[in-house]
Amino acid sequence: MTSAYKDHLGRPLIAVTGMGVITSLGQGVEDNWKALTSGVSGIHKITRFPTEGLSTKISGTVDFIDLPAENAVERSYAFARETTAEALAQAGVSGDFNGPLFLAAPPIEPEWSARFELADRSRPSQKPGDAYDRFLAAMRDRSDPVFHEAALFGAISERLSDRFGTRGLPVTLSTACASGATAIQLGVEAIRQGRTDRALTVATDGSVSAEALIRFALLSALSTQNDPPERASKPFSKDRDGFVIAEGAATLVLESLEAAVARGAKIYGILKGCGEKADSFHRTRSSPDGGPAIATIRAALADAGLNEGDINYINAHGTSTPENDKMEYGAMLSVFGDALPSIPVSSNKSMIGHTLTAAGAVEAVFSLQTILTGTVPPTINYQNPDPTIVLDVVPNVKREAKVTAVLSNSFGFGGQNASLVMAAEPA
Image (tube, rainbow, N blue to C red; front, side, top):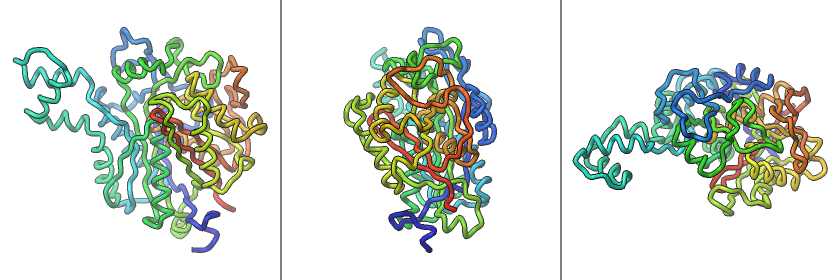
Protein backbone atom coordinates (compact mmCIF):
# COMPACT_ATOMS: atom_id res chain seq x y z
CA MET A 1 0.00 0.00 0.00
CA THR A 2 1.38 3.43 -0.93
CA SER A 3 0.96 6.56 1.21
CA ALA A 4 -1.65 7.86 -1.23
CA TYR A 5 -4.03 5.27 0.16
CA LYS A 6 -3.36 5.95 3.86
CA ASP A 7 -4.75 8.50 6.27
CA HIS A 8 -2.83 10.67 8.73
CA LEU A 9 -2.46 7.72 11.14
CA GLY A 10 -1.27 5.28 8.49
CA ARG A 11 -4.63 3.50 8.25
CA PRO A 12 -6.36 2.61 4.97
CA LEU A 13 -8.46 5.40 3.53
CA ILE A 14 -12.11 4.34 3.25
CA ALA A 15 -13.91 4.98 -0.02
CA VAL A 16 -17.65 4.96 -0.64
CA THR A 17 -18.25 3.16 -3.92
CA GLY A 18 -22.02 2.65 -3.83
CA MET A 19 -25.10 4.24 -2.26
CA GLY A 20 -28.81 3.50 -2.09
CA VAL A 21 -31.62 5.30 -0.29
CA ILE A 22 -35.38 5.21 0.33
CA THR A 23 -37.33 7.89 2.20
CA SER A 24 -40.81 9.35 2.09
CA LEU A 25 -39.54 11.45 -0.83
CA GLY A 26 -39.14 8.39 -3.05
CA GLN A 27 -36.93 5.45 -3.98
CA GLY A 28 -33.36 5.85 -5.19
CA VAL A 29 -30.60 8.39 -4.76
CA GLU A 30 -31.53 10.39 -7.86
CA ASP A 31 -35.21 10.91 -7.02
CA ASN A 32 -34.49 11.64 -3.37
CA TRP A 33 -31.78 14.15 -4.14
CA LYS A 34 -33.91 15.99 -6.69
CA ALA A 35 -36.78 16.32 -4.22
CA LEU A 36 -34.56 17.18 -1.24
CA THR A 37 -32.70 19.96 -3.02
CA SER A 38 -35.99 21.31 -4.36
CA GLY A 39 -37.28 21.75 -0.82
CA VAL A 40 -40.04 19.16 -1.21
CA SER A 41 -41.52 17.67 1.96
CA GLY A 42 -42.37 13.99 2.30
CA ILE A 43 -44.39 14.54 5.48
CA HIS A 44 -48.07 13.70 5.08
CA LYS A 45 -51.22 12.66 6.89
CA ILE A 46 -51.12 9.06 8.11
CA THR A 47 -53.47 6.74 6.23
CA ARG A 48 -51.87 3.36 6.95
CA PHE A 49 -53.51 2.99 10.36
CA PRO A 50 -56.20 4.84 12.33
CA THR A 51 -55.06 7.99 14.14
CA GLU A 52 -58.29 8.84 15.90
CA GLY A 53 -57.51 9.93 19.44
CA LEU A 54 -53.79 10.45 18.72
CA SER A 55 -52.25 13.89 19.19
CA THR A 56 -49.94 13.34 16.22
CA LYS A 57 -51.54 12.33 12.92
CA ILE A 58 -48.66 12.89 10.48
CA SER A 59 -45.46 11.10 9.53
CA GLY A 60 -42.93 10.48 6.80
CA THR A 61 -44.00 6.91 6.09
CA VAL A 62 -42.98 5.10 2.91
CA ASP A 63 -46.35 4.29 1.39
CA PHE A 64 -45.41 3.82 -2.28
CA ILE A 65 -44.16 0.25 -1.75
CA ASP A 66 -46.86 -2.38 -1.19
CA LEU A 67 -45.99 -4.04 2.12
CA PRO A 68 -47.86 -5.41 5.15
CA ALA A 69 -49.01 -2.40 7.11
CA GLU A 70 -48.29 -3.77 10.59
CA ASN A 71 -45.24 -5.98 9.98
CA ALA A 72 -42.28 -3.77 10.91
CA VAL A 73 -39.75 -6.52 10.25
CA GLU A 74 -41.01 -7.13 6.72
CA ARG A 75 -41.13 -3.40 5.98
CA SER A 76 -37.66 -2.80 7.36
CA TYR A 77 -36.27 -5.75 5.42
CA ALA A 78 -37.86 -4.64 2.15
CA PHE A 79 -36.44 -1.12 2.47
CA ALA A 80 -32.97 -2.51 3.25
CA ARG A 81 -33.17 -4.98 0.36
CA GLU A 82 -34.02 -2.27 -2.15
CA THR A 83 -31.35 0.20 -1.00
CA THR A 84 -28.73 -2.54 -0.92
CA ALA A 85 -29.56 -3.63 -4.45
CA GLU A 86 -29.20 -0.01 -5.60
CA ALA A 87 -25.90 0.48 -3.78
CA LEU A 88 -24.37 -2.72 -5.14
CA ALA A 89 -25.45 -1.86 -8.67
CA GLN A 90 -23.90 1.58 -8.30
CA ALA A 91 -20.71 -0.02 -6.97
CA GLY A 92 -20.59 -2.47 -9.88
CA VAL A 93 -20.60 -5.46 -7.53
CA SER A 94 -22.43 -8.55 -8.72
CA GLY A 95 -22.64 -12.03 -7.29
CA ASP A 96 -21.71 -12.59 -3.66
CA PHE A 97 -20.59 -9.46 -1.85
CA ASN A 98 -17.76 -11.31 -0.09
CA GLY A 99 -17.49 -8.92 2.83
CA PRO A 100 -19.15 -8.38 6.23
CA LEU A 101 -22.60 -6.89 6.77
CA PHE A 102 -23.31 -4.31 9.47
CA LEU A 103 -27.02 -3.58 9.83
CA ALA A 104 -28.76 -0.95 11.92
CA ALA A 105 -32.33 -2.10 12.55
CA PRO A 106 -35.10 -0.92 14.90
CA PRO A 107 -35.61 -2.85 18.16
CA ILE A 108 -39.03 -4.08 17.10
CA GLU A 109 -41.52 -5.35 19.66
CA PRO A 110 -44.94 -6.87 19.03
CA GLU A 111 -47.69 -4.33 19.42
CA TRP A 112 -50.20 -4.75 22.22
CA SER A 113 -52.98 -5.64 19.80
CA ALA A 114 -50.92 -8.61 18.61
CA ARG A 115 -50.11 -9.62 22.17
CA PHE A 116 -53.77 -9.62 23.14
CA GLU A 117 -54.72 -11.53 19.99
CA LEU A 118 -52.15 -14.25 20.52
CA ALA A 119 -52.89 -14.60 24.23
CA ASP A 120 -56.65 -14.76 23.72
CA ARG A 121 -56.36 -17.16 20.80
CA SER A 122 -54.02 -19.47 22.68
CA ARG A 123 -55.74 -19.42 26.08
CA PRO A 124 -59.34 -18.39 25.55
CA SER A 125 -60.43 -19.78 28.92
CA GLN A 126 -57.90 -17.81 30.89
CA LYS A 127 -59.33 -15.02 32.99
CA PRO A 128 -58.28 -11.47 32.08
CA GLY A 129 -55.05 -10.49 33.77
CA ASP A 130 -51.78 -8.86 32.95
CA ALA A 131 -51.67 -8.84 29.14
CA TYR A 132 -47.91 -9.16 28.94
CA ASP A 133 -47.86 -12.17 31.28
CA ARG A 134 -50.57 -13.79 29.19
CA PHE A 135 -48.59 -13.09 26.05
CA LEU A 136 -45.44 -14.70 27.43
CA ALA A 137 -47.38 -17.71 28.69
CA ALA A 138 -48.99 -18.17 25.29
CA MET A 139 -45.64 -18.04 23.51
CA ARG A 140 -44.25 -20.68 25.86
CA ASP A 141 -47.23 -22.99 25.39
CA ARG A 142 -47.63 -22.69 21.65
CA SER A 143 -45.05 -21.44 19.21
CA ASP A 144 -46.19 -19.26 16.34
CA PRO A 145 -43.44 -19.04 13.69
CA VAL A 146 -45.20 -16.36 11.63
CA PHE A 147 -45.72 -14.15 14.65
CA HIS A 148 -42.21 -14.83 15.89
CA GLU A 149 -40.70 -13.82 12.55
CA ALA A 150 -42.71 -10.59 12.62
CA ALA A 151 -41.08 -9.59 15.91
CA LEU A 152 -37.55 -10.89 15.29
CA PHE A 153 -35.60 -7.90 13.99
CA GLY A 154 -32.36 -9.93 13.94
CA ALA A 155 -33.83 -11.90 11.04
CA ILE A 156 -33.45 -8.86 8.77
CA SER A 157 -29.66 -9.13 8.62
CA GLU A 158 -29.81 -12.90 8.11
CA ARG A 159 -32.11 -12.48 5.12
CA LEU A 160 -29.92 -9.74 3.67
CA SER A 161 -26.83 -11.88 4.14
CA ASP A 162 -28.44 -14.80 2.36
CA ARG A 163 -29.63 -12.63 -0.51
CA PHE A 164 -26.44 -10.69 -1.15
CA GLY A 165 -23.80 -13.22 -0.13
CA THR A 166 -22.07 -11.35 2.67
CA ARG A 167 -19.30 -13.07 4.60
CA GLY A 168 -19.36 -14.18 8.22
CA LEU A 169 -22.03 -13.65 10.83
CA PRO A 170 -24.04 -10.50 10.02
CA VAL A 171 -24.03 -7.90 12.78
CA THR A 172 -27.32 -6.28 13.83
CA LEU A 173 -27.14 -3.21 16.04
CA SER A 174 -29.47 -0.64 17.51
CA THR A 175 -28.10 2.54 19.06
CA ALA A 176 -31.26 4.63 18.77
CA CYS A 177 -31.00 7.64 16.45
CA ALA A 178 -27.24 7.12 16.05
CA SER A 179 -27.67 3.58 14.66
CA GLY A 180 -27.06 4.37 11.00
CA ALA A 181 -23.85 6.23 11.77
CA THR A 182 -22.75 3.45 14.12
CA ALA A 183 -23.19 0.82 11.38
CA ILE A 184 -20.99 2.90 9.09
CA GLN A 185 -18.40 3.26 11.85
CA LEU A 186 -18.25 -0.52 12.29
CA GLY A 187 -17.64 -0.92 8.57
CA VAL A 188 -14.89 1.69 8.64
CA GLU A 189 -13.19 0.00 11.59
CA ALA A 190 -13.34 -3.44 9.98
CA ILE A 191 -11.45 -2.16 6.92
CA ARG A 192 -8.99 -0.09 8.94
CA GLN A 193 -8.14 -3.12 11.06
CA GLY A 194 -7.34 -5.17 7.97
CA ARG A 195 -10.15 -7.67 8.53
CA THR A 196 -11.64 -7.00 5.10
CA ASP A 197 -11.24 -4.83 2.01
CA ARG A 198 -14.94 -4.07 1.79
CA ALA A 199 -18.00 -3.81 4.03
CA LEU A 200 -21.73 -3.47 3.46
CA THR A 201 -23.31 -0.97 5.86
CA VAL A 202 -27.10 -0.78 5.96
CA ALA A 203 -29.59 1.11 8.12
CA THR A 204 -33.35 0.64 7.92
CA ASP A 205 -36.50 1.54 9.81
CA GLY A 206 -40.06 0.63 8.89
CA SER A 207 -41.43 0.68 12.41
CA VAL A 208 -43.91 3.57 12.32
CA SER A 209 -47.14 2.42 14.01
CA ALA A 210 -49.86 3.72 16.29
CA GLU A 211 -48.02 2.32 19.28
CA ALA A 212 -44.78 4.03 18.21
CA LEU A 213 -46.61 7.35 18.01
CA ILE A 214 -48.11 6.82 21.45
CA ARG A 215 -44.76 5.99 23.00
CA PHE A 216 -43.00 9.04 21.58
CA ALA A 217 -46.00 11.23 22.38
CA LEU A 218 -45.73 10.18 26.03
CA LEU A 219 -42.19 11.57 25.93
CA SER A 220 -43.53 14.86 24.47
CA ALA A 221 -41.11 14.32 21.59
CA LEU A 222 -43.46 14.51 18.57
CA SER A 223 -44.78 17.53 16.75
CA THR A 224 -48.53 18.01 17.07
CA GLN A 225 -48.70 20.66 14.36
CA ASN A 226 -50.71 18.38 12.08
CA ASP A 227 -52.06 20.90 9.60
CA PRO A 228 -50.50 21.30 7.14
CA PRO A 229 -48.28 18.22 7.58
CA GLU A 230 -45.45 19.48 5.41
CA ARG A 231 -44.92 22.49 7.70
CA ALA A 232 -44.57 20.52 10.95
CA SER A 233 -40.83 19.81 10.93
CA LYS A 234 -39.04 23.12 11.43
CA PRO A 235 -35.56 22.58 12.88
CA PHE A 236 -33.92 25.52 14.64
CA SER A 237 -37.09 27.63 14.32
CA LYS A 238 -38.59 29.42 17.31
CA ASP A 239 -41.95 27.65 16.95
CA ARG A 240 -40.57 24.09 16.64
CA ASP A 241 -42.46 21.67 18.87
CA GLY A 242 -41.10 18.18 18.18
CA PHE A 243 -39.88 15.78 15.52
CA VAL A 244 -41.93 14.05 12.84
CA ILE A 245 -41.51 10.29 12.91
CA ALA A 246 -40.57 8.73 9.57
CA GLU A 247 -39.36 5.64 7.74
CA GLY A 248 -36.55 4.93 5.34
CA ALA A 249 -33.31 3.12 4.68
CA ALA A 250 -29.85 3.67 3.24
CA THR A 251 -26.96 1.46 2.21
CA LEU A 252 -23.32 2.39 1.67
CA VAL A 253 -20.69 0.16 0.12
CA LEU A 254 -17.36 0.85 1.81
CA GLU A 255 -14.00 -0.27 0.44
CA SER A 256 -10.38 0.50 1.11
CA LEU A 257 -9.42 3.19 -1.38
CA GLU A 258 -6.58 1.01 -2.66
CA ALA A 259 -8.94 -1.91 -3.40
CA ALA A 260 -11.52 0.38 -5.00
CA VAL A 261 -8.95 1.99 -7.29
CA ALA A 262 -7.46 -1.39 -8.17
CA ARG A 263 -10.78 -2.64 -9.52
CA GLY A 264 -11.56 0.66 -11.28
CA ALA A 265 -14.53 1.57 -9.07
CA LYS A 266 -16.02 5.04 -9.10
CA ILE A 267 -15.33 6.86 -5.83
CA TYR A 268 -18.25 8.85 -4.41
CA GLY A 269 -16.40 10.14 -1.38
CA ILE A 270 -14.13 9.28 1.53
CA LEU A 271 -15.21 8.34 5.05
CA LYS A 272 -12.53 10.36 6.83
CA GLY A 273 -13.51 10.08 10.47
CA CYS A 274 -15.93 8.72 13.04
CA GLY A 275 -16.63 9.88 16.58
CA GLU A 276 -18.78 8.24 19.22
CA LYS A 277 -19.41 9.19 22.86
CA ALA A 278 -21.99 8.17 25.43
CA ASP A 279 -24.22 10.51 27.43
CA SER A 280 -25.33 9.24 30.83
CA PHE A 281 -27.40 12.32 31.73
CA HIS A 282 -30.86 10.82 31.16
CA ARG A 283 -32.60 7.90 29.44
CA THR A 284 -33.98 10.12 26.68
CA ARG A 285 -32.76 13.69 27.21
CA SER A 286 -29.34 14.94 26.16
CA SER A 287 -27.03 16.60 28.64
CA PRO A 288 -28.03 20.29 28.59
CA ASP A 289 -24.39 21.46 28.53
CA GLY A 290 -23.81 19.43 25.36
CA GLY A 291 -20.61 17.94 26.75
CA PRO A 292 -20.95 14.46 25.20
CA ALA A 293 -22.01 15.94 21.83
CA ILE A 294 -19.03 18.31 21.89
CA ALA A 295 -16.72 15.40 22.61
CA THR A 296 -18.30 13.38 19.79
CA ILE A 297 -17.74 16.11 17.19
CA ARG A 298 -14.17 16.66 18.34
CA ALA A 299 -13.49 12.92 18.26
CA ALA A 300 -14.74 12.70 14.67
CA LEU A 301 -12.57 15.63 13.58
CA ALA A 302 -9.51 14.16 15.31
CA ASP A 303 -10.16 10.76 13.75
CA ALA A 304 -10.37 12.43 10.34
CA GLY A 305 -7.17 14.40 10.90
CA LEU A 306 -9.02 17.65 10.24
CA ASN A 307 -9.49 20.85 12.22
CA GLU A 308 -12.62 22.97 12.58
CA GLY A 309 -11.64 25.22 9.68
CA ASP A 310 -11.63 22.30 7.23
CA ILE A 311 -15.39 21.70 7.57
CA ASN A 312 -17.47 23.71 5.10
CA TYR A 313 -20.89 22.11 5.62
CA ILE A 314 -22.64 20.52 8.59
CA ASN A 315 -25.52 18.10 8.11
CA ALA A 316 -27.18 18.63 11.48
CA HIS A 317 -29.07 16.10 13.54
CA GLY A 318 -31.67 18.89 13.59
CA THR A 319 -34.69 17.01 14.90
CA SER A 320 -36.97 20.04 15.43
CA THR A 321 -37.40 19.30 19.13
CA PRO A 322 -36.95 22.35 21.37
CA GLU A 323 -34.33 20.82 23.64
CA ASN A 324 -32.28 18.80 21.15
CA ASP A 325 -31.88 21.62 18.65
CA LYS A 326 -30.73 23.95 21.43
CA MET A 327 -28.22 21.37 22.70
CA GLU A 328 -26.84 20.68 19.22
CA TYR A 329 -26.41 24.38 18.53
CA GLY A 330 -24.52 24.82 21.78
CA ALA A 331 -22.29 21.86 20.95
CA MET A 332 -21.49 23.15 17.47
CA LEU A 333 -20.83 26.64 18.86
CA SER A 334 -18.40 25.24 21.42
CA VAL A 335 -16.45 23.45 18.68
CA PHE A 336 -16.57 25.98 15.83
CA GLY A 337 -16.84 29.20 17.83
CA ASP A 338 -17.13 32.49 15.95
CA ALA A 339 -16.81 30.68 12.60
CA LEU A 340 -20.10 28.80 13.06
CA PRO A 341 -22.43 31.46 11.57
CA SER A 342 -20.45 31.31 8.33
CA ILE A 343 -20.75 27.50 7.95
CA PRO A 344 -23.90 26.23 6.18
CA VAL A 345 -25.83 24.00 8.61
CA SER A 346 -28.98 22.33 7.31
CA SER A 347 -31.35 19.61 8.46
CA ASN A 348 -32.65 16.96 6.07
CA LYS A 349 -35.29 16.12 8.68
CA SER A 350 -37.18 19.29 7.79
CA MET A 351 -38.22 17.43 4.63
CA ILE A 352 -38.03 13.69 5.32
CA GLY A 353 -38.77 13.68 9.04
CA HIS A 354 -36.76 11.62 11.52
CA THR A 355 -36.07 8.15 10.13
CA LEU A 356 -34.83 7.01 13.56
CA THR A 357 -32.58 3.96 13.15
CA ALA A 358 -31.91 4.83 9.50
CA ALA A 359 -31.22 8.55 9.99
CA GLY A 360 -27.42 8.48 10.28
CA ALA A 361 -26.98 6.49 7.07
CA VAL A 362 -29.65 8.38 5.11
CA GLU A 363 -27.99 11.66 6.04
CA ALA A 364 -24.55 10.27 5.18
CA VAL A 365 -25.79 9.60 1.64
CA PHE A 366 -27.13 13.14 1.38
CA SER A 367 -23.87 14.54 2.78
CA LEU A 368 -21.89 12.73 0.10
CA GLN A 369 -24.32 14.02 -2.53
CA THR A 370 -23.63 17.53 -1.30
CA ILE A 371 -19.91 17.02 -1.92
CA LEU A 372 -20.49 15.40 -5.30
CA THR A 373 -22.93 17.97 -6.69
CA GLY A 374 -21.89 21.20 -4.98
CA THR A 375 -25.49 21.71 -3.90
CA VAL A 376 -26.33 22.33 -0.26
CA PRO A 377 -29.89 21.20 0.59
CA PRO A 378 -32.06 23.69 2.47
CA THR A 379 -33.75 23.63 5.83
CA ILE A 380 -37.38 24.25 4.92
CA ASN A 381 -40.10 25.79 7.08
CA TYR A 382 -37.62 28.34 8.40
CA GLN A 383 -39.97 31.30 8.71
CA ASN A 384 -39.61 32.18 12.40
CA PRO A 385 -35.94 32.14 13.42
CA ASP A 386 -35.02 31.36 17.00
CA PRO A 387 -33.01 34.39 18.17
CA THR A 388 -31.05 32.18 20.57
CA ILE A 389 -29.80 29.94 17.74
CA VAL A 390 -27.67 31.90 15.31
CA LEU A 391 -27.03 29.63 12.34
CA ASP A 392 -26.90 29.76 8.58
CA VAL A 393 -29.51 27.03 8.11
CA VAL A 394 -29.63 27.50 4.31
CA PRO A 395 -33.19 28.72 4.80
CA ASN A 396 -35.89 27.30 2.52
CA VAL A 397 -33.89 27.30 -0.74
CA LYS A 398 -30.88 25.21 -1.81
CA ARG A 399 -27.50 26.83 -2.36
CA GLU A 400 -24.65 26.13 -4.74
CA ALA A 401 -21.28 25.93 -3.01
CA LYS A 402 -18.01 24.03 -3.20
CA VAL A 403 -18.05 21.53 -0.35
CA THR A 404 -14.98 19.43 0.35
CA ALA A 405 -15.62 18.18 3.89
CA VAL A 406 -18.88 17.53 5.75
CA LEU A 407 -19.67 16.85 9.40
CA SER A 408 -22.85 14.80 9.90
CA ASN A 409 -24.26 14.55 13.43
CA SER A 410 -26.51 11.87 14.96
CA PHE A 411 -27.43 12.39 18.62
CA GLY A 412 -29.88 9.80 19.90
CA PHE A 413 -32.05 8.71 22.78
CA GLY A 414 -30.29 6.73 25.47
CA GLY A 415 -27.14 8.87 25.25
CA GLN A 416 -26.00 7.52 21.88
CA ASN A 417 -23.96 10.15 20.02
CA ALA A 418 -22.13 9.66 16.72
CA SER A 419 -20.61 11.99 14.17
CA LEU A 420 -19.15 11.24 10.76
CA VAL A 421 -16.73 13.27 8.68
CA MET A 422 -16.90 12.77 4.91
CA ALA A 423 -14.67 14.34 2.28
CA ALA A 424 -14.07 14.50 -1.44
CA GLU A 425 -11.83 11.95 -3.11
CA PRO A 426 -8.15 12.89 -2.76
CA ALA A 427 -6.76 14.63 -5.83
